[in-house]
Image (cartoon, rainbow, N blue to C red; front, side, top):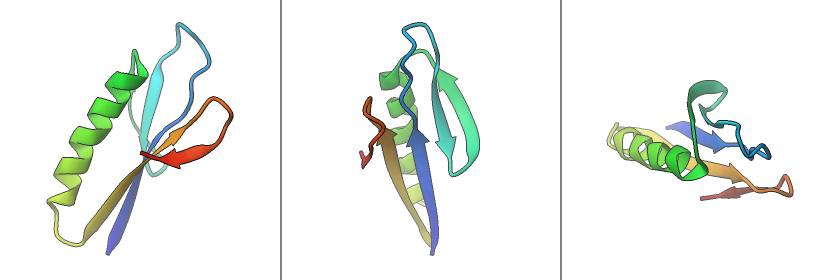
Length: 69
């Protein structure tokens, strides 16, 4: 089974971009956390439809702790 983790790291800057990574690879940058999460959820749907794939989203909180979304 292939496991994919989508990461949304915390962005402390009010004007910075929110990034989305698929494992170590940059997927994209988004103006808001909500936009990054929407894109991550859309990716999960497409990845889960592939046989033998498992996927999860991890989001970094302001305190640096990662949680499963």
